[in-house]
Image 1: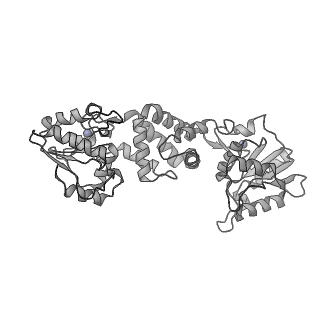
Image 2 (image 1 turned 60 degrees about the vertical axis):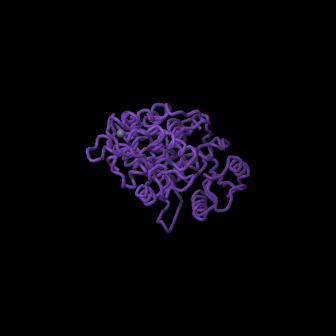
Image 3 (image 1 turned 90 degrees about the vertical axis):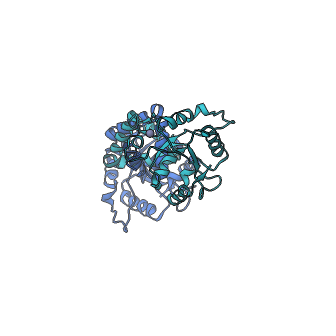
Amino acid sequence: MTEARGDIQTLIDLMARLPGLGPRSARRAVLHLIKKRGPLMAPLAAAMADVASNARECLTCGNVGTTDLCAICASPKRATGEICVVEDVADLWAMERAGVFRGRYHVLGGTLSALDAVGPEDLRIPRLLDRLKDEAVIEVILALGATVEGQTTAHYIADRIEGRGVAVTSLAQGVPVGGELDYLDDGTITAALKARKAF
Amino acid sequence: MTEARGDIQTLIDLMARLPGLGPRSARRAVLHLIKKRGPLMAPLAAAMADVASNARECLTCGNVGTTDLCAICASPKRATGEICVVEDVADLWAMERAGVFRGRYHVLGGTLSALDAVGPEDLRIPRLLDRLKDEAVIEVILALGATVEGQTTAHYIADRIEGRGVAVTSLAQGVPVGGELDYLDDGTITAALKARKAF
Ligand SMILES: [Zn+2]
Ligand SMILES: [Zn+2]
């Protein structure tokens, strides 16, 4: 194949390492990019180089962005007293698409798992407890998946917060059993947030 | 969403324009890239920028590469008397993966289509006829899809070549009716090439 492609083969091999793309779809994508190298490939390469150099996790909440404090944590328009706890950034994005929550987030970076040896210190749980004091938080909304791991993690966090004078609620109506937030439509997330109940 | 993502959103929007990726898989791919920004995202951005600046169509055969004469046309190891005519570069790559053909290619860039108003001058057909003389070609292998358009195009080319003392053959055994080359396994392509017959 080297004879046929060279640098192009290198690009195909790297593209094939993206989730959801195999060798065949990587080849198709690269041919498409080469056809659209002015309007699509050059801007995509530039955007990717930009994010590769600048992307970082927010020091406060764990969201990804291109600054030490993410755009949500930095925004004066977002309420400071409410923190919505999510498993990962994809879930934060799903909440934002629903557009109904106007507080701030805390991205755990996973769930507790005895099997995978993931403990509280492997997640962003200690940082969450610090934030409760620093930001005068009045409500923590646990927006974790309705999976065994998600609910184990939710209970652990609720236990740690108990007695600090902070209300702990969780998404309720509409989150299907075994479902993950990132797969839900905006309406379901909105309904679940509006019907949240004391944990 | 701007508040939540900014530059990252720009990258997601561009990724979502790749064939086979929708908004959801583009988001997943970008989160994966951000997690692997050192080992994957930075090299991918560099490879993409490189191909975006250097990719071009071979002036002789229409294959894509990073030089005016593609690696196959430039290779002294490839036989000059045989030209394999394919619809597009994906088909050329499929032939190369099979690894059985050691001549050179000619990429038409599509098929004749009355419906889409694609005539011979819109494809690389005049260039093919020039090559027959310039390169002392003795055989043209028509490796076009077993579709109506592919076969119409094959017949048109065979008619134009007739009387020039050049053998015209076509892939035979193994190409399924309605099938496109790029979807076939290597063995099928090898069998079809070996059993090629006079057109
Ligand atoms: Zn943040
Ligand atoms: Zn060439």
